[in-house]
Amino acid sequence: MKNKDIALLIIGLLLFTSSAIAQFDPKSVCRFENGDLVFRIDKNWTDAQKHEVSIKFDLDSTLLVRIFDGFPLVSSDSITWKVKVLKPGLVEISKLTVPEVPAVNIPDLHIGTTPTMILHDLMISENYGGWTSVPAENVIYGVNSFSTASVFRYENSIASIYLPGFKDAINIFIAGSFNNWSTMQSPMIKLDSGWVFKVKLQPGRYMYKFIIDGKWEPDPNNKLKEDDTYGSHNSIFFCPNYIFKLSGYNEARNIILSGSFNNWNERELKMNRTQTGWELPLYLKEGTHAYKFKVDKQWILDPANKVTRPDGYGNQNSFMAIGDTLIFRLNGYKGARTVNLAGSFNAWNSGELFMQKDSMGWTIPYVLAKGNYEYKFVVDGKWMTDPANPYSTGGGETQNSFLAFKPNHTFQLDTLTQAHSVILTGSFNGWSNENYRMKLENGKWVFPIWLNPGKHTYKFIVDGTWILDPRNELWEENEYNTRNSLLWIEP
Image (cartoon, rainbow, N blue to C red; front, side, top):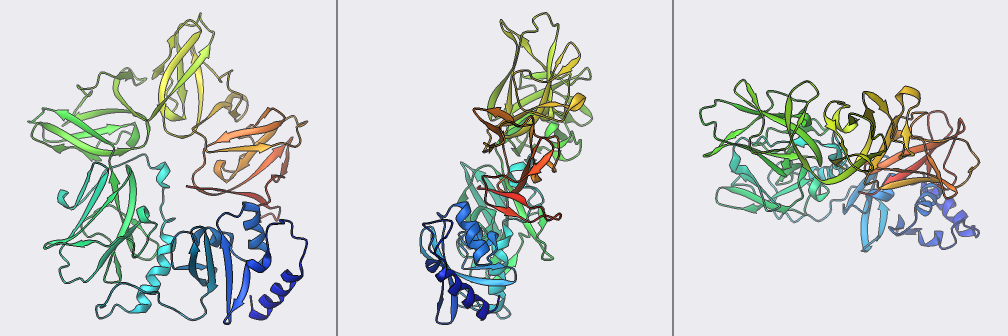
């Protein structure tokens, strides 16, 4: 957008008196100051107000979200914006027409480390948080792989990262997914033998890099890595939340941990020998997990765990769980011999989860992670959906009951209540035209769901007709030029 066009746009906005959002004053949003184009952005604006700003001023809607991430510079559509924080939740951004290097607390730079390089790294850093092949919420398990155990430790919720050597370095910072890839927020402490950084973290998966005198470097002592799309990679570590232990078996050469969380891989998770036996710290996503130990070539149950269940093939597995418990219930069917539960949470294994009979019918407790699941009951070998659950996916023999455990959003359509069928479809379910079936409740169609943080696009299918969400003013164009409704889920 040329400066002349921008000036005409501002003049037009100053003459515009009937804004759709009364409390929104265009004159307070955009101005010229010393030849610079300056926008004032309020984090407390509604989604509709953000959308109006994005449309009126030709600003990328993603930019309006990223400018509050704490970075001094933000890039969008090949334009670099300088960010100035006025107060919490209120910032000003100005178009950076001449390259500018923000103040960096590095008094002396090594030869070859130029201000341009630091500027480039700062501009890159604001994008790093989204670069991961698997969203953090969907990581099922993980185990660390450092060259020596002494370079990483996680105790009492404190992660300690040690970088040996680099005695001639002046400053070393660490940037990662745990600090929004800030380039100057997390300095490492210099020791006689290297550098160390400590931070309080929840169990999970984290990406990081070192910034050694202005130059980005992955951790040379960490074997876990992921492509950073810049010809290098990010290092990865896990903060474990469970330690698998097996006492004894001192004569064994190798002991492998294998379970449903890693598709029963027999070679991947080698346990570490200790003075009393074997152990392996592991990060595990919340939920229920089946597992066994493989001692050399022999499979064994966990002798310290009394919780076992059949695997559906005539054998038994040990079971452990992390998280909250949900009670599945099927009322009635008191004459049935067996009732089983099967679903996406246990790979649809119909011979594993045997429900118990009580005075009202059948029940089973099961620990789940927050998320979306499909399931059915198996009554004396016959599969059936949950008659007490109005939410389902698919149709006919492929119809399953749908469960959102700890949902973080509920889609609502409070018009068209005379419709016979309303289906929710979007980027979160592959735009399926039969998933998910909404429920008519108290004069509105509703569908609770759990969604990953970030952007989602969606539509409703009302009696076969695809429509936008009439209550949502946010949308983006699609390949068919018919637009999709837009939804942002906060982390």
